Structure formats: structure tokens, C-alpha cells
Image (cartoon, rainbow, N blue to C red):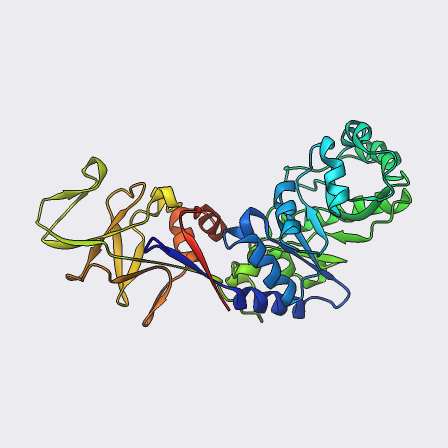
Length: 368
């Protein structure tokens, strides 16, 4: 390790979170662990293994290359690719036993020339329907009717039929209920067409934790694996954050009243102050939106002052400290704690945006 800035990932927390969520779900429901975006910034391979040890039945990623990485590392659980792959890549999916998302008949038309006619293996698909999120998925009965003949091909195995909720973290559940009603209607399209999917699923982390009755045949758990969930809306469960982030002071100086620091003279001292420099910046994924947040130095809160630079930032200290003193950006120190949810609230985003933004310059250190 060549830098003082490093992230610690608790594999034990991921395992325990998976097991705790598994405990809350009906026994008949499968648990799909979503480890896209490099495991929400925690490391996809390590996260996948920990989730499997915690009881995950399936895995999901966003893109084909993420799935191929897991296969190259010996991960054998069924893997669903959530974004449609290019039709020309169909044989890669079949050879590596990957499940693909399909949303319209045109994908099959474009895919057909790329399927090797002598291949005896099936292509496993999950049909994505759009019930209100407006991202991807078929929306109309006409689109479904056009898709059905392709799903009836001998080499197509319809493993799943699914949607995703847009407002599952909101207290108001009216729109979620509207989406659910639409999904149940679309589910009947499937059954009356003679296309009986193996797994019907609609609940991601928030919906699964808040409404276990929506588990159906499978739940897709992503953010909650890593301890990100709406605690104020969920009772009877406690999930542990898996990520903590540390650095060290590389310089401490005294600033006189009226002196400036940061690009564009973005901070002016109102009195004599001690300022520490920490080697992390927006080049590491620590966005300028995190200006004025706080970090921990010997259990005391220290505010980020001035604009965050590409490689470094400055914090206001309560006194002089030695260079090399540990700084906690996410996590606990003595009696104090900086939660990633606190940072996300300040930045107007969600916890997983902060964790996935941490770049490869920040080394991940895994602990049990």
C-alpha cells in the first residue's frame, strides 16, 4: 500500500446482512445478490463470494463484462445481466451460462444470425417490464404479444419476468402500489400466453425489506447487502455498513485571521485556525459536493473547508496535530461516527453513489 488513504471492506458485514435479509424472506423466495458497479464500490468478486456464503442463490450485475469477470474468478452461481446485451454477444452469454434481460422482439431479430445453429445449450432470459420507472422494459400488451413467439423458441428458457419500483424508499406508497398493480396485470399476460416464467420478481432492497409480502419468487438485494437501507422506514432488522474509509494528515499549519486557502480563495479564516491537509480529492471520487462535511481526528469532528481539490482537501482542526494522525472519513473513531448516510444527505444523493464513486486509486482492504 503506497497511500495513506484506503477503504476497509467488512466481508463479515456483507455475509451477515445477506443472512439477515434471507431470514426475513419467505423460504420459497430466492435471494439475488446484486453486485454491479464493482459491488457498489466494495469489490464485486469479494462481495459476490461473501453474499454466496451468506445464503444468496443468484447474482446480478449491470453489464456483460461484469458477469464475465465473476466467471473468470470462479464464481458459479447463476448470474443475471440487468441491462440488455448486444445481440452479437449472445454466444458469450450462452457459453458462460449467463442469464440476459430482454425487453422487446427486435433484440431477438437482431440476435438470431449470431446464434450458432449447432449449439445445444439454451439461452436463459428474464423479461423486463416497465411499470412506471421509465428506464427499460416493455410497456404495452402489443409489445408483449410481439415478443411471445420469440420466447417460444426451443432454445429459449424464460427464467424470469420482472420490474423495478421507482419510489420504494418513499414513505408514501401510492405510486409503488400503482406499479405493483400494473406488474400483476402484466404477469397475467405471461401466464395467459403460455409463457410461465420460473421466477417472477419485483422487489429490490427497499421494497423487500419494507414489504416482505412482495417477495414473490425472488428478491433482488443490492444496496442492503452493504448496509444501505432506509432505516427510518424499516423495523425489526439491523444491517451493518460494510465500508469504512481512512486517511492521515499529511500536513498541519496555522492559518492567521483573514488568510485564505483553497482554489478561488474559497475559505477565509475568521480567526487564527489550525488547518490539516488530507490526501484524498475528487480524483478519488470524493466529490466537491462534500465540501463542508466533517471527518474525525482523534474522535473529534473536523470540517472540510475550501474547495476539494483533485488529490487533497483541507480540514479545520481544533488544535495542532502531528502529521500522520489518522483521519476517519466514513466510520467510527472513539465515541464519534461519520455515517455514509450523513454524507449522502449533505450531497443530496444516496449512499451508493458515494461508495461507487470511490476510484481505483483508493485501495480496498478486506477483513473478515
